[in-house]
Length: 382
Ligand SMILES: [Zn+2]
Image (tube, rainbow, N blue to C red; front, side, top):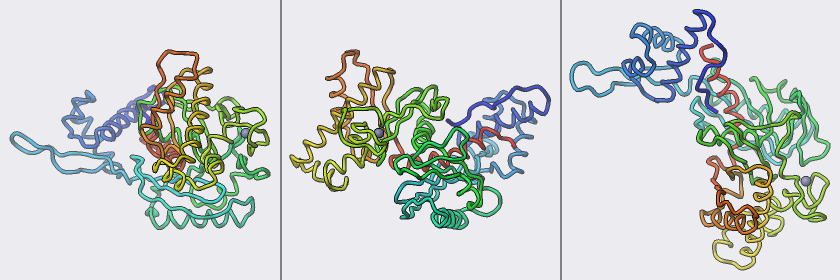
């Protein structure tokens, strides 16, 4: 979530100066454009104090003058705004058959997006290819003056607790070290479970999401529990792995080695496999009322409803849907899904709310980029 208060306590004059400068910057950030008089009034600081911080922020290249506010008489007051591209960050999503690079600015706005078709392989040539491509994209997009903060790598798998090794969860024998990337990328990097990043980006976009259960209906299904605007990851760096909860004992095989898992029925890959056609074709035929696709879709929604009902038996929460399948859904699909949950649940509290994510398939890569943006904003002024 976008940081609203500076971490740490104030024990010295230097701390107070940092705290005030933080307040000034973040107030401008939130207001988008603001005058010195409005800053004085909102932050209850004197004119010389505000003036001093504005000058410091102007000198550091973090804010700029952006014109004049209207005035009923006399000189028009100057407006200040942050410089959104003063710092930038990238998110690199690694999936089995492609890599996606997204660069965002300090407002989390996408300034660059590109995809590379590349099969994951735990070999130096793979890391060379992806890293060289990412370095080149960044070099061509971001001025080489220290504004690039880092690259958050979104991996379809859980990094180990140390964060130094991890594997692609659906590709056995793919354990690799973060060093494979960090030694090749020209910027600081870290990797994070993709669904955690996807949930983070949705929280960033909608700070109203305080508590929710996030279900990412992507090629591999992912889920995250959001509590107090944060992701509950659990002590072993994993939690809420709903995708491997058993839906049908002895059912369809799952990549994890078990059978009947949620992933085998509700991931976008599973839907495409069950239908025997790519999702764009499946949904275009569904919207033409084709009986074959309608039956498959009804079963899919009922299975997803069962997953949601099971989740709600453990934790009563708002449901946030994201990922590839969600991007094809209509408002009527969401209403139907809620109706199926209502039909099967024993808790007739009429309290189920389902909303849709904002970033769709790009959520994880954007979340990777926001990883370093959030860090920067929470540490200001440096
Ligand atoms: Zn499984």
